[in-house]
Image (cartoon, rainbow, N blue to C red; front, top):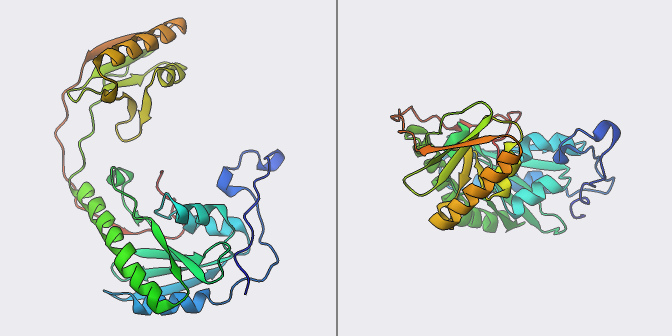
Length: 283
């Protein structure tokens, strides 16, 4: 048996490939022989996992893009996510539990007697993932019994905790900072009680000036944020620097007290398995 096929090449994109995102660069599998034990291993692993019944679905891929609908859902910012996105897998197995959770199993690159197991994201509103730690995944030996023990003790507790946090965030959303009013042709800033300075832009070209002054875009709050960790003096200096940069662009700045938060409304938690073709959440 051979190890996983080589990494999908990353050539400089041009012509027809120029507009493709990095992970969709066209790539075909190496003709090298692939491991033939993944399907049997995944099935045996599923039978040994604790709790409600797990089932295994094995799939072969003809080309690298065929794996993307699944690998884009890997809930891992470390080694498992890297391997799933940067290597041609050739084949995979998805373990599904009857109550929703799913795991992706595939050959570990360059290690013929090991597999990688990673959590897959559930179907939920993107906001529900705010401040949820990724459960990531683990590398396991090719022995199903030992692998099941490691998954049960090392991966599943993190996975269950992450799923529970997503459910809680769905039922009781984390408060979002109310944005300052959006003003045409201007940048509107607000100083919040926790010391953070928020900014929204109604002017084209303002983003670069804000980034250069230490602001960073915060997707959950949907505004630019200047961290409270700078301290009042440094924040004032950075606001002044941003104002000067914006002024050179003909963009005005308005600073005002933080708006009053709107009352939160709860909604029923719905965390379901994601269909294989569904788009992954933004990381």
